[in-house]
Length: 281
Image 1 (tube, helix red, strand yellow):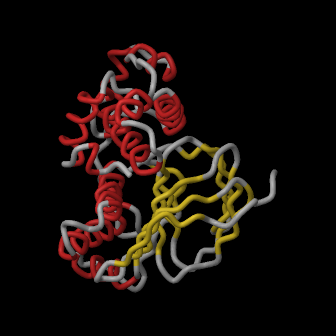
Image 2 (cartoon, one colour; image 1 turned 30 degrees about the vertical axis):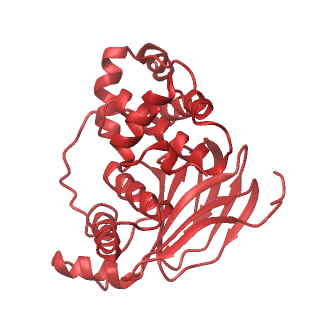
């Protein structure tokens, strides 16, 4: 295991009016010791897959973090991370207890005894989408204003309380989806081959199932069809390249897996609401 060769790199940071702290950061390969926090931490992994080992709350977690994988770290829980392969890029949401307790009271639950569950690399499409909305606001300079961000903060707190705490409704509908291991394999493959001409058959081969079955179980796991997920990830990849490199729009379109820059521009306007040149450096 290599030693940590640097401090975390904070890419962006903000604090909302109701106390949610948002941080976009890179953690280098190596060992990272994180002390206990007063807030509950939601970490949403971004970008390339990376192998992780994490010790926290008396448990040892081992796995591969993939784009959209979520860790939920309860308050007062120190953790020790070992990061392999690639730097770990994550969106961190630090939730103050008053937000969570307020939601618990509104739900008629015991906010004092409420326990937030310790989660490692889970999938939660609604929580993930809330994270992407917050990330977009952060990167664009919060154009929608404080009220919008406060609403997103409350939505995140509500999702954590109702789905990832001792107050969670256990009568959740069972839906057909990929196992956690298979889903990580599929998402890692997509991430590594975004610039390629991906086909449903290639992705299905990774999952070990038919293309027809993949369409059903992928939507069950991720809440959207395979092709829409791939387009969203290509848009996010292109957005990152536009913000961080000096490459031309045409070069970035190809690097992100689009056939040409007008194809990329159309999807960026649809998903992000802005044209590529409004994002570029």
